[in-house]
Image (cartoon, rainbow, N blue to C red; front, side, top):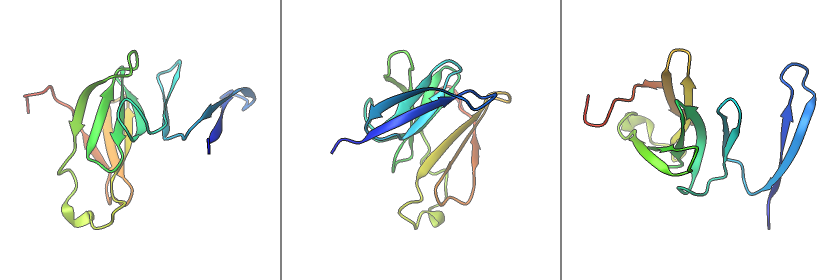
Length: 134
């Protein structure tokens, strides 16, 4: 059975409906770049991409039930890098099967990146460094 969903766009100032668009499939997250919305439905370029966030010209999205975050080019839709967050959370907190990475937020004003998850006791601020440097 095909799932049909409707996206609604409202005016921020007066909440008037501006437009509707429909799509098939599931919605696993939306992220804006200031002019466009990028949506994940859990499929390609990597299966189960979730919770996208626009960060400095790239889309970051976690891979559901993993410790990986894909860095995706919004121009091509291809994965251009990976962030491996293995070890960020103590194994003590991983006793629940649903305690998996599931949230990315970016503070563009202060250039801070945060990650968290369902059933995690904390939110983590992470800093990305060029590969090979610490």
